[in-house]
Length: 219
Image 1 (cartoon, rainbow, N blue to C red):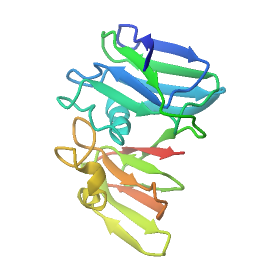
Image 2 (image 1 turned 180 degrees about the horizontal axis):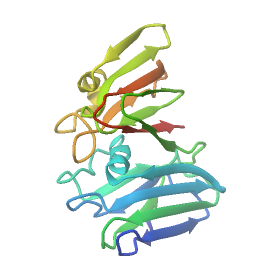
Image 3 (image 1 turned 90 degrees about the vertical axis):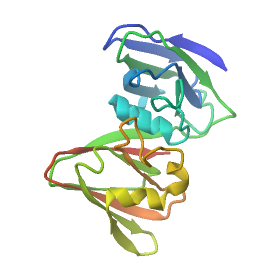
Image 4 (image 1 turned 60 degrees about the vertical axis):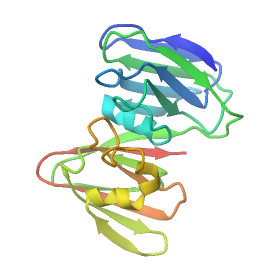
């Protein structure tokens, strides 16, 4: 493990780190107090944006996909998986501070990588819907408050429509460490996993209460 930087103190202050490589894991030490210390996270490899996330809860939820230790009271650090191993290409990391802490930043890998994880966010307006395909994961915030249902179409032709509260039943092994079976400190981010490629697409339907941000992950 190597320390690659320290977050600069001050709400809204951006810490930029230039590296000759992209580490597999980005680790933010002491990332949690009452909330996650990051409000924005951007990663560019070879000048191409791979991760662009806004919102402490959404960033925390992405970290919890593989490392369920970042929620309030559950652990002192956050871990983001940036790639499937170390990628030897110029990399720019930009971390926006939420508070005034000076978190240590580490980068570590378990082997040589071939692909970067890519995360992007989409807003689904109230009483609207949006379909996502060719994804490894979808995180849906404001769930279940602003979510009416989620329709999942499988590659074998079967489809069904789920209440957001039913989603943990489909992906129980990935939710099992969460106190209320949903991600983020507020337990209000639902998760759809498609690492096995069995889902052709999913459609998120919002209700009249408000919009929802969907974070789509691909590799």
